[in-house]
Each structure stands twice: as C-alpha cells, then as structure tokens.
Image (cartoon, rainbow, N blue to C red; front, side, top):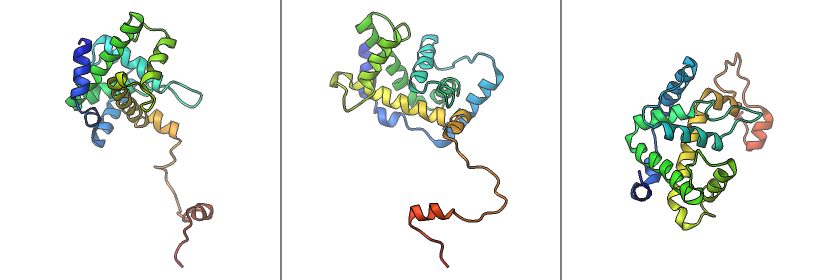
Length: 196
C-alpha cells in the first residue's frame, strides 16, 4: 500500500468507529491468544503479512513494555489478540494495516527505512509526534488517529489477558466464606452508611 492510499484510507474511514468491538469478541480473542501462548509453537498470523506482524509485535511492546510489575504486550499475547480481532471484525483490517503502512512511509521519509529497521531513538521520535493529540501537528492527523486507536486495542488485549489482569492486581472472583459488609473506612470514604 503506498502512502497516498494509506492516508486516503485513514482519512476516509471513520477511524473512531472502526475500532469499536464487542465485549464477546474481546473475550474470544483473549482466549485464542492464551491458547496460542499455551501451545508454545510460533503463532502464524492469519491477517498480517510477515512485515506487518514484526511491526505489530514491536509497536505493542513500545506501548506496553515489560517492567518490574509484569510482562510486555507480546508476553500477554496482544499481537495474537489483534490478529484474531482483524478476522472477527473486517472493518478493523483497513485502518490497522493502513496505519502500519503510514508508520513505514513516515519512517521512510525521515530516515529512509521502515519502522522496524529504525533505531529505538528514531521510533520514539516518531511516536512522540503522534502519541499526544493536542500537541501533534496537523500533518500527522492520520498517524495520530491510527496510533490512538492502536493503543486502545493494545490496552484492550493486554488487560483482557491473564497477565494484564494480574498486573491490575484484581482481587475479584475469589471465594468469600462469610460476607461481613463493606469495611467502615470504605463506607466513610464514600460518605454512606448501612441502614439500621
């Protein structure tokens, strides 16, 4: 896809609505990503080219890198999640693939190489130009729209994964033998009391 096509696609597609997905799709995609990780075999993307797959894997880890608290987006199966989502919602394919092409074209203009071939500093410089919508220059509008939606999809994939739920330190879904009500300090903070 050339630059003009990528920009035309991103400008024509209502990007904000193209990146909406149903909760049941998110659950199914997360389950498929878990299955792929559990098999241990390399995942074969069904909707991304090999180059796009490398770009997706790199970009999601720039958005959610591994840290002291948890693993990265690829550790959580986010690329597999995205690949499933593209198959589940065909309206996602054009904006995502067009945005990935936009990244490569922008990197080619700046440094004569693809996003994957850029140095960490070059990638960060480009992402800094599109990650902050209020600070972004108008000529980066297509990149801003893509990146913000891609970041949302990355977060959805990560926080619907087992690793992401652990990262949240979610304490629900546990057995409580006896419910004694909400702790008094929580009631005080909320400014409410149990009725007598």
